Length: 131
Image (cartoon, rainbow, N blue to C red):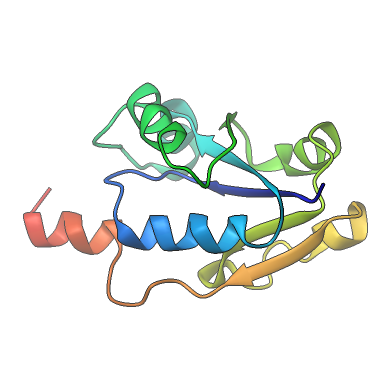
């Protein structure tokens, strides 16, 4: 069984998120999503979410591509997550290209950057709605 992990906030869930999750799941058999907690988003990213962690987690758990949702609480937990969940592939959107290449050296996981859906983003939605 090939295990895949991806990370994100997944606030204001939209079809770009679904595309990313579908393509991440296509990389293996079991998809783990590390969901940024509210505290991590605020303390480390200065980002306030519209939906709480628990609501975002419920939304992700309802998506057929997602097998497990875990909390992302720190930038540096990726290596331990890969080891703990026996991850074969680490997947992120290509806006992060190159940022996680070190994981291939520190773990046995392959690092893959998938193209984003270009015409949609949570930031764009918030700007359009003036949120």
